[in-house]
Image (cartoon, rainbow, N blue to C red; front, top):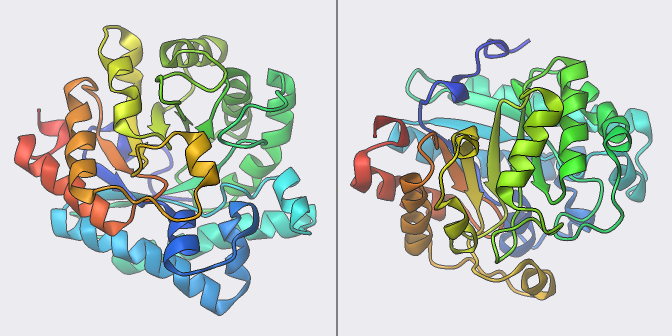
Length: 321
């Protein structure tokens, strides 16, 4: 088991970056056909595995340049039962795909980790439905039952924690946290927000964090925001309350477009890396515990570099304010 399993460095205020938009990079920069955004399917071939490894290494080079840690997420956002079956995966094959994804990152960590750049492996899990639309909702028990299988598969590997990304309603988040608690693995919960700063379900971010914590005795290691541009949720963060201190991470989109617009886009909108860096770094004014920052859809190593340069121009690193 990982040396970080019982003492997540992400909780110690040390600055960490993340990798960026793997799936959008594969599709738009490399011309890869990626049904259902299931990037783990590429691990079946040497070429696909090499593409994903190079993606991680580009971000690791940025982390080494800026002497910060990096949290690398496995390409398993779509590696749960319903999505796997769409690609013809049996339950056992899907469990193996989750294991292969972690094994790859474990090798990357052995190759690149250093005292100045610790590497944390996050087993990524995603929503049962579309990350941009609520669609058919599960209750808490259904959500726990659905996600337990993938979380158990990831827990049996060298992951340091699991991370749930692009969640858009509260009951699914609660079910995921309960499943992680059963598996005895740390979990982070990342909600995606619309242009009005709310979840697609209509709930506020504050409601989402407070309800999830209340229903799970605060088991979530920390909360994040992902797959939204900083301009969409900056105003949401301009308030008071303990719930803001539960947010440690942001993985923002490069584009200012809405999710509906991005769904229809045929070309990548990678925004302006310099502006992305400045606007994402500026979120530290409102999130006092923010120490994990990076990109989501449309971002690549350029955005990561600009972000950390902006942080250095501000107050060196989030944890040093």
